[in-house]
Amino acid sequence: MTATQKFTKGLRIFAADVAQGFFEITHNGFALLGLAVMFAAITLVARPEIRQAGEVQLMGWLQDRQQVVSGMNTDPVAVERATATNPKDLPKAQAAVAFWLSRKYNVAPEPISALVAEAYDTGSRAKLDPTLILAIMAIESGFNPFAQSPVGAQGLMQVMTKIHSDKYDGFGGKLAAFDPVSNLRVGVKVLQECISRAGSLEGGLKFYVGAGNQEDDGGYTAKVLAEHSRLLLVAAGRTVPVVQPTSVPVVHPAKPAEASETVASLFNS
Image 1 (tube, rainbow, N blue to C red):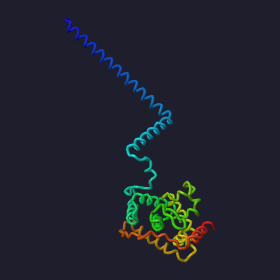
Image 2: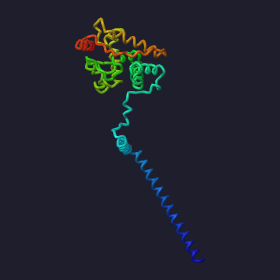
Image 3: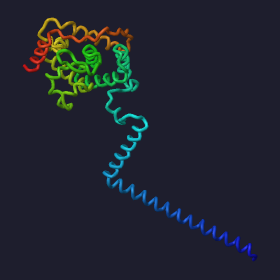
Image 4: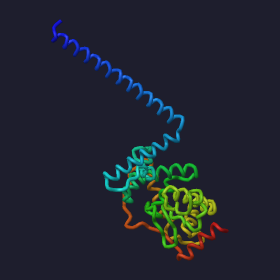
């Protein structure tokens, strides 16, 4: 064997040894990595508080990165607080009502859809027609959840918060008057009490607006019932022209002080 052949053979042996060593190191490295991953997984399963802490840190890091990229403070869970629903997810009748109200009152269909769905759900439990509830919201506030009347009626259903503050206890306090769903549910409860006291829907609506002891309610009952009739037709699949109101009527047949006393005496007697 010549010197060149010996050198070539030695080089091959060296290369083979290096390759074998690299394989063993890599193999052992992957094995160690696998063991580390398995150990970490077992730890996270056995210690959920560690996993939760890691998730919080990761979410915080992602939010910080998002704020750097977007240049504004972000809130990934904000969508969960939004009172909005895709109208396409509603039953046909509810979707028709939502789109009709959206066009008439110039309100986005998504929040209107959420209110329609809630009105149907709450109305079913309260044994009240959901389109009646929606008609009251339309006449009272025009679907403005932050509306306030001169006598202190607030929110979608224009509930007298000072008088019915106890009804908001289950919703975290009287500021829930400006949460659309909470205001709707409290308003329905007040409406139930008004109808029960008056003995009729028409009489209940007069009590609701604070005109229970007066002959004239400023046309409030007629407006609510007219809108209710239109919504019933829409829900039944009928075509009802959309005539946008020139202004959202908020009826107060009595002076502010008198109206407050009327409603207060109704529920304190």
